[in-house]
Image 1 (cartoon, chains in turn cyan, brown):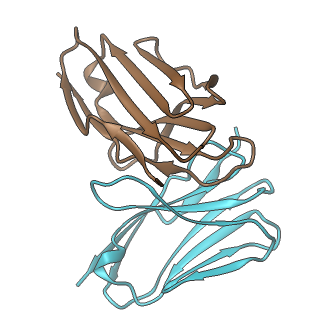
Image 2 (tube, rainbow over the protein chains, first blue to last red):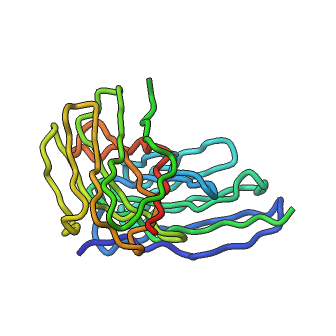
Image 3 (cartoon, rainbow over the protein chains, first blue to last red):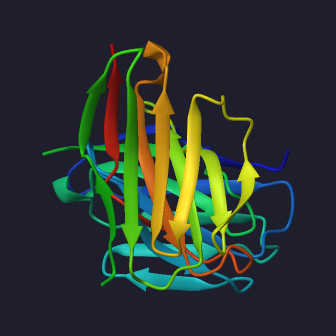
Length: 107
Length: 114
């Protein structure tokens, strides 16, 4: 069935470095959502992107939706230890999640 | 109220036990979901309720039985589970299943089957 693929699976960064995770689909998506799950926690909805080429920012987080609406990225500038967790994408017209990118930040 | 409340938070049950997980939301959301999550994996869909009716069952074994008594409540009845069913069980809700809006998740029930 339809899926969204997320890369990378894991990312270790030094505190202060930037981080990016990518979500890719072979089909056009109606929208894309991003979630964050802290270790031992539950997924928390971060944002939804709907328009082609859309860019949204939340403090140090920048979310982009590709022009063809087939891919999306989440970029964190100057990571902090509070950014640790797994970031999942989900296409709004699918009930499944991407595999997630686990971010580990070394202080 | 912008939360989804799940009880219990932790549950240990034997393979012959019967137990129930509960989920409640008062946001007026008309879609409710059960997801199962194993360690280091994404949430895996089990059931979807849309306007209090079961709309999707992802070929879940019959030892898991969902119930939606009203638009605010969702239960998951468990019977004769196996150790491999141990996982985090997440309830989620959204405004409407057809609009593809974001989910609000509960904090989950961490289930251990012994």
